[in-house]
Amino acid sequence: MRIVGDYEVDDRRERLDLDMVWKFLSTEAYWGRWRTRPQVEAAVAGSWRVVGAYARADGQQVGFARAFSDGVTSAYLADVFVVEAARGTGLGKEIVREMIDDGPGAGFRWMLHTADAHGLYRQFGFAEHSKGWFLEREREEPLR
Image (cartoon, helix red, strand yellow):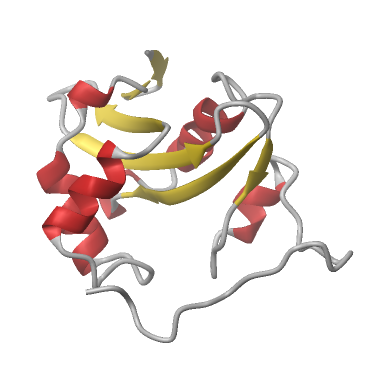
């Protein structure tokens, strides 16, 4: 656990508020609104690592990120968010830092898909892949 101003950034899975995570992902995240509660629970349970951010005043969860990985060479960063009330505090940056630079995956190749926050991720070395090495099969419709 690390203190960041008025917040704590923590990778203890048992501290997560899955109600809060599911509520955010299913109502506010452009990438996850179609997810059901059981799908979010399964995704979190199957994640290699999770990071939460919590208000020091009351312990309420205000941010989240998860990753899946082979645990050896590469990882995929997913579901990064900070609730509206805690935005603008640098907390998103600290969540990403904890996940990719300060944890067991610091030496990994990291990947992610996102339509926003490119400036945040560029600070950690993420860039559009121009070499044509990355292939992707997109789903036409979300899993239900």
